[in-house]
Image 1 (cartoon, one colour):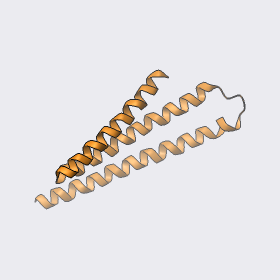
Image 2 (image 1 turned 90 degrees about the horizontal axis):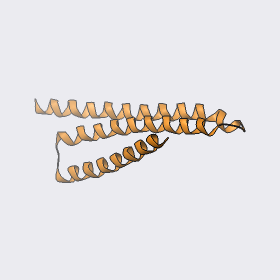
Image 3 (image 1 turned 30 degrees about the vertical axis):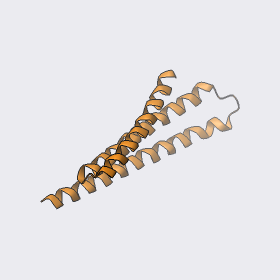
Length: 108
């Protein structure tokens, strides 16, 4: 029974990781489509560029949260001290990224 639980959690972690990659890929694609006209036009208002950056930043933050969730799931299966240390380092880095993204979004 434990083996099935571990396998299920591993599949769930993979699914969450795929969701994170899909969110980030779709966000980048949307940003690229929205950015193309901004580079072509000469008199593009600065607000349009800021809005684009903020929208991309919000979606990247969501993608990072999903990626962190996948890491948490993997560590829950069979945590070693090495796994816990790696998860802590990843969590700190992703939390810092999210913090600075949120600060930039707040400022704008």
